[in-house]
Length: 284
Image (cartoon, rainbow, N blue to C red; front, side, top):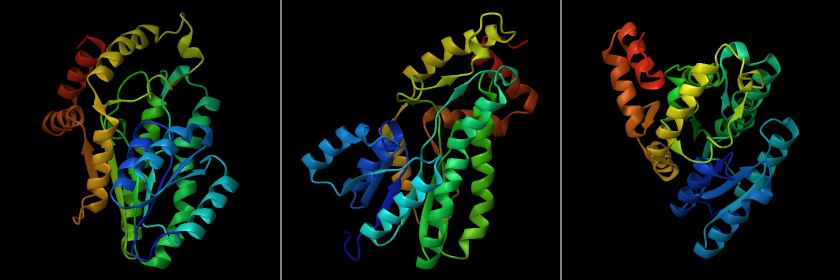
């Protein structure tokens, strides 16, 4: 159980990558941290580190796609922690494939986690924070929430949805002392790429978009090899939470900084040409 002055944080998708590192970093900085994940068997390493470092981490089962799971998990967390000061919505996955190659079923499944999952957890946490008259909700977006690119149209759309939701919610929640934050990583060296799902039709060699997917695949691995670490993204999350300023968006990663600088300084046609050259090796 938390002490009266100990802040309580909840992190979704904590079994690996950004969620894992964020949970550890928050706990190391004094937060009573509830690291949630769909399969708690994947929390063994976190249990081990928490035990070794005597960290205030609790692993809780939470499936963002299941209403009952979300409600039960938040109820347990409030029972043990008495409050929720920080919610980090991190759970999500990537879906590769051109839009035409991505079925509606595959699209709905992605949105169920990336968008509706985030909404489910936020809907349950908001009344708690509103009654407290304080709280911070950090939504892990992506460079894909600011910049479109080929070969993952539906995934990109899910991140754009998070951006719009967060920006609108920031207006609504401010009156209750609740702050909304977007963290926008560039490419990250995590198992996100290996865990990416590819649309069924996108894997067929006769897809009309197979050439784009092949080019993106070869360039994607290079970007991952040169990407930011999950630890760096976790530090940006901590900085965003502890920041006293009103900033809504926090860019995470040198690549993302470069992309946004180019996006804001270039006309659309020039930026589009640059992106095609970098991602597809063609400006035509």
